[in-house]
Amino acid sequence: MKKYNFLAFDIGATSGRAVLGILIGDKFEMQELHRFPNAIMELHGKYYWNIYQLYDALKESLAICARRNVVPDSIGIDTWGVDFGYLAKDGALLGLPRAYRDPYTDGAPEEYFQRVPRSEVYRLTGIQIMNFNSVFQLFRAKKEGFGPLEAAEEILFMPDLLSYLLTGKKVCEYTDASTTGLLNPVTKEFEASLLEAAGVAPSIMRPVVMPGTFVGELTDALARETGIGKVPVIAVAGHDTASAVAAVPAADREFAYLSSGTWSLMGIETEEPIISEESFLHNFTNEGGIDGTTRFLKNITGMWLLEQCRKEWEKAGRDYSYPAIVKMAERATPFRSFVNPDDPRFANPPSMTEAIVAYCRETGQPEPAEDDEFIRCIFESLAFRYKEVLALLSEIAPFPIRKLHVIGGGSMNNLLNQFTANVINMPVVAGPSEATAIGNCMVQARAAGLVADRWEMRRLINSFLSPAVFLPEGSGEWEGAFKKYQSITSKK
Image (cartoon, rainbow, N blue to C red):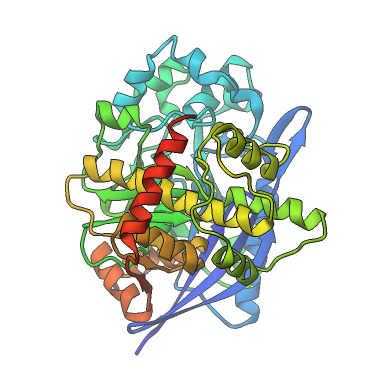
């Protein structure tokens, strides 16, 4: 039985890694080959990604493969969305890509909406309005006379830009392009009117290609330098959440997913975008998925609250392991105090613990004092917030939602998974925690002709994965607590 090696580059805003996915029949395993840092650079008041450092990290990963006598059958790259690099007419990269945290887009949406109304932008794209969307980056870059834009022939989004550096070939992959606030999710083409309103020629965009498209082989120079040869590069689901959702081990469409980490993304997978007054009102977004599907989802604050509390506790000399944190939550008094995790005060407060205490004080609740009380408050509040968003999804979804698949790092939090099952009163299926890398590899497997579509991919994932299933317990008690949560959070 043939052994297939798929090299997945999974790159986030703070770090990246090279993961080797090994597929033999229906047996699959992953090996992390290389982990490398990624950080935003500040230069003269502007913020950039060091694309050349990332390129060097990819080259080192390829060299590691060569030293281990591993020749990948293909390579795939996924990253975060919205950011891009500018290319000149001769294909030269015009400086470093701007980073989405660059404050040059502060206030840009409101200014842009004077040219195209907010409701029209949503009608055309179905994308939630965030100041760092690519449309607003281009709008502000044009306004400031940013040199690379003025000289640019075209732009490439981050996964496509890295593929270009490896192969010299240019594509524009659908899932990442869908995050820009410029792509029409029905036609799957860029809206010329939105680019023109930003002061940018529509010709700056390349035609969109679907996940699984062959980009090209490694350049001759790179193949020689790394010793790995002419390996093909595949445009996978380039947006990391799209790759993660591709790895949801679902048997049918009647599910919702929760990509759980520092931030949580809850949504459904649909054949067509959902653009309505209700989706606009509740700020749902329509992003691209594999097989031309739409990821209809909403952003939720995830483990950010806990992570910020942990930083404070560590500074005070209290460093808890994750198993210890779960035990602390288990022994704490249930249903004592709640917060709305998405309240703006929790976005980036000087002290997360003080922000939680203030919220509880203002809503007439007992104020957390002990660390275990903060943890229990956060876990229960997240579960209740998940129920609220799931209820909205259930109202809008064109099919019944019968289970929630939790993927990503948060899928390993068994206590929160059980809390969530209790409050939503439906099964929670947890895993895989490495969904993004697995989804990246599975799209490569499909490009190799080993699987036919996303459902066959998911059946294959199920064959080597044993997800944990959490069934509801004590639903009546949790329903009563949820009503209390709603009463408290509606005051804010």
